[in-house]
Structures are given as structure tokens and as C-alpha cells.
Image: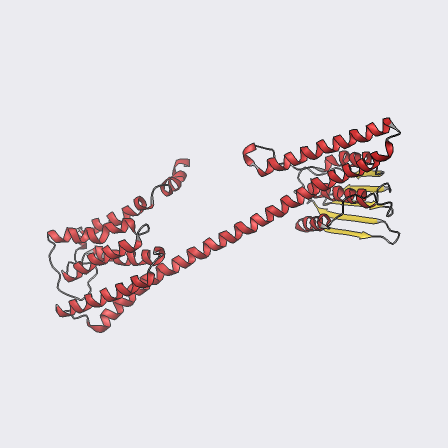
Amino acid sequence: MIGLRMVPDSWRRWPVTVRDLPLALLIALASVVPALRDHGTQLGDLPGRPFDALTVAVVALECLPLAVRRRWPGLCLALVSAGFVVDQLRAYHTVSGSALAIALVSAGAHLERRRRAAMVLGSAAYVALAVALDRQGSTEGVTGFAIFYLLLVLAWGIGAWLRQARAAEAERRRHVALTARAAERTRIASELHDIVTHHVTAMVVQAEAARYLTAAPERLDTTLTAITDTGRRAITDLRHLLDLLNPDQGADPRTPAVGDLRALVEQTRQAGQPVEFTEEGSPADTTGGAEVVAYRVVQEALTNALKYAHGVRTTVHVHHGERETTVQVSTEGPGSYTGGPGGSGRGLTGLRERVGVLGGEFSAERRADGGFDVRAHLPTGSRP
């Protein structure tokens, strides 16, 4: 069964000329089958002529060019048309005459240049053929020739429709690829913002505090150690993100989980921010992206607390329910501004988008007493 499933893929790897050759050979063989004689296209209604040595050349001229109908559609149409003209003028009426319709469909679908010239030349050649057949005593009449011409136009039109459908599908795939690329860039930018902003903010705050600890060597050493640890964590997270962007590295495509929240809170405490952390319940084994988004909500909220309310008590509460995870981060007051890097609002906007993708709710608002609350409700599905 596996071998049979691989046959279509193996067939598609062959050159297009090789894949089109069987159809050409099949029509050629059908043309020389005795039972199918006089059952081909009979334009002009002339009395049939017995097959002779020229018949083989005519059949080959009509059928074999079909092998290049997709690679060189213009050449294929010209050769098949020439064979069809000889076939009708000699009144062989072979089955190979049907190759003209296939050549027209292929030319309409795959001919890229000089399409209008091909239609004009083809129409002129048909008119010349109709005149020649009429002089040989054809009883087809103008109506018959006109109907056959419309059938040829229909074959070309089918090919043109296939060409437009193929172009529309290619455009749709291009649009999907662009949309996916844009979404991936947005995701990467959001991840990069979360990683860099949090770690760099913590380092800036710690470095600012170190200025005032020159008289206390022990505290200064602790602060500098914290700065070093924060920098190392930033490098580790950035390397992890770069590994995700390069699948050849074979990196495990994992992202920070809710289990890392305690380490995140401890890092923020080392930067001088008093944080109270409580966690109720435990995350489900399969929560989709809710666990990652919950981590990012806490990370962004603590980063903003470090920037704009350094030294002010901050509380982090995470509750894992049966169907949702709730995150709330509250800062008691505005505190003192420590000169941390200014914000662009991208972090909160990115969080709102992430929570929205999961079908959750997100809010970030300042309280009347000057404090700030960040809340997120993240659906996780039913837990067993």
C-alpha cells in the first residue's frame, strides 16, 4: 500500500514531456486500430480514403507533438494543426484528428506569449482549409464549417479558463504565504519585545540602583551579580528564539511555561521590586497556547512595574481553573520613576492580540488611586 501511494509522487518527478508522451502514443495507436477507421474527425464530409504510407506520417504529425503540449504549446499546436490539415484534405479521417482539440486546450492553458497572434493565424488557417475542402466538393456548407470553428474556439476557451484558474490559485497561494509570513514576523517581533524589554529593563533598573551602593560593597556585589544573571538569561532566551527561527539547528520548539513564573518573579525581586506571588491550582497537561500567554502577561506587567513603579508593591495572582486560567497583576501606586527605557505600548497591544486569538479577555487600566491592574482570562478547555 505504501508503494502504491508513492507512485503519484514518483510520477510527478518525471519531466513533463515524459508524462505527456503516453497520451500521444495512446491516440496514435488508436488511430491505426482497424475497428476505429473512419470514426475520426470528418470535416468537409468528403469520401474517406484508404490508409496508405502517408497515413503513418500524418498520424505521427498529429499525435507525437502532444508530448510537448505543455512545454512548447505553440509548437505543438502548429504541428498538430498541420497534420490535421493534411488528414482532412487527404480524407483519412483518423482518430488522431482529436489531437487538435487537446492541442488547442493545452495552448489556451499554457501559451504565454503571442496568444493573440496564435488565434489570428489559427483562424486564417482554418478559413483556408474550409475553402480548400469546399473546392474539393465538400457538402459541409458555411453552417457546418462555422459550427466546427466554434467548437475549436470552445476548446481554446477551456484552456484559457484553466490558465486563469491556475493564475488565480497561484495568487491565492501567494497571498496565503504573505499572510503567514506577516503573522510569523509579528509573532517573532512580539517574542523579541517580551524577551529584550523585560531583561534589559531589569538590568537598567539594577544598574541605576548600583550607583548608590558604592559605600556598601556587599550589596553592590549582589546587585552586580543579579545584573550578570539577568544578562545571561537574556542571552539564553535570545539563543532559544534564534534556534526556533533556524529549524536546521534541531531546537526543541518550546516556549516558557507557567512553571517558570516563580523564576520570573524572583528575577524581578532581585531588581528591587517587591512582588507577592500566589498561584492556585496547576496548569493542565494540554492548554494550547494559554500557558505561554499567561507567562507573557505576567512578564510584561512586571516589566512595566519595574519601569514606572519601581519599589512599589506588586501582586501577581494566577488561578488555574477547569476551563480557564486567570492572571491578575496589580501595582499599588505610581511609585518613583527610575529612568527606565520608555515604552511604546507595543507590549500591551501584543498581549491583547495574543489573548484575543485564544478567545480570552484582556484588560489593562489605571485605578483611581494611581495603581495599575492587568487582567487576563485565558480559555484552556475542559480538564480531565
